[in-house]
Amino acid sequence: MKSLNAKPPNMIGIWRKFYARPLVKDAFTTTIWNVIGKGIGILIPFFIAAWYGVSVKTDIFFFVYGIVIYLTGVFSRSLESNIVPFIADLRQKAEKKIPDFITKLLLLSFLAMIILVCIFLLLARPLLSLITRFPEGSFQLLLQLFLEISPFLILVVCSSILIGVLNAYFKFWLPAVSPGIRAIVCIATIFALRQKIGIHAIVVGYILGELLRLIVFGYVLTRKKLISLRINFVFDRTIINFFKTLSFQMFGLVAIGLNPVVDKIMASWLTTGSVSVLQYADRLYFIPVNFIASGLIVAVLSHWSEKYYRNKKTQVLKRDMHKAIGIVSLVTISLTVFLSFFARQIVNIAYGRGEFPLEMLVLVKATFLCYLVGITFSLSNQIVIRALLVLKNTKAIMKGAFLSTISNIFLNILLMRFFAVAGIAFATSLVNAASLLFLYLQFKISVRKELT
Picture 1 (cartoon, rainbow, N blue to C red):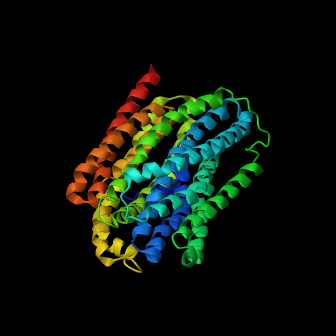
Picture 2 (picture 1 turned 45 degrees about the horizontal axis):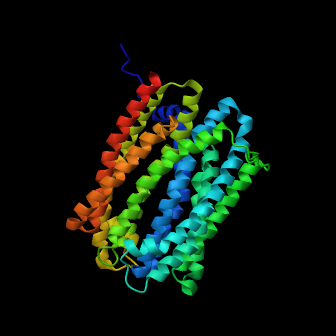
Picture 3 (picture 1 turned 90 degrees about the horizontal axis):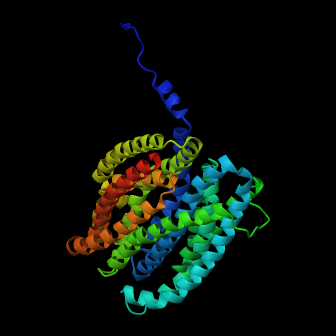
């Protein structure tokens, strides 16, 4: 029988025991660094809102930026995530080959991006003239901004490779804090040049910020001798397998990444300012999504990859995935209730100043609330995708992405007729729910195949 004088559990001791776990420690500390780094980056749209307001020019910039983010997401996110399990595998088999592997990835990715950017710029005029409906006289600005921002795409892809390497070696703090470096340079550039070159100052700021970030990554990895100065043009099986696995996820990201682009295209069919409203609401939604995902999502991929390729136990991976989904669901449901209750105050604080028209605040709030509905599904999706990446089953991710894109187009057409731009945001939430169900079923199939 327990003594009546027994002391209650020591909460500090419980936390220390919990924090002593490597995954928990890395997830927590990476989240803190991301709050600092990406927290500064999140301020950029608010400065843009205050300095530029809502206009045809902001609509065009956010449309261009959305396409660029889509393209960088296709390449950078797939490179950054796929490189982690491959390096984890190489560390168990042939660690000496890692510098050569990284150097080849950098060279091949750099050359491929130059070619793809040139092709995209050649196709931009005929394609954009068909799919956009911006006011007459603004199409030249659209093409000019695409040309100006193209170097940013190449720089981000190179940075993503180096970020993946740092994450594979559990050096999470530098990738996490680095968006703050880019953001500070970007905000300072916009402030200095906005009166002289107008909307183009935003593009210059993003390019200069990303260039500095890439230089910092390159310096750190060169010092750690993880980048080889010699270039070996013999492509071994590791490189071939990497690009084969990468291709499936890239095709998937091509599909799923189309969702925000399609959203902006369809928003351009609505009243002037709809693209900007969608972007401003999305930025508010992005803050909690980014802060929750930034630490946990990055850390689980590295830790799960190392654990899996050391022991090859799929049941352990499945158990860890369920735990992560449970934690994410608990946090996000509570956060959704809180943010929904204070949505009006949040929107007013973020945008109720400067050149922003006050009558648009109600529409931003409604769109923000529609995005919030799907936050739990969105982050749980990311957990399941990381588990599939550990198993290198990028085919399942590709299938889910195509399903997501088709569903998004259909739901956009249906819901925007009744709820305008807010309907586009609500369609995104419904798509996230359907995608989670599909990917979870694909993971269960993958586990059964590994066990047989």
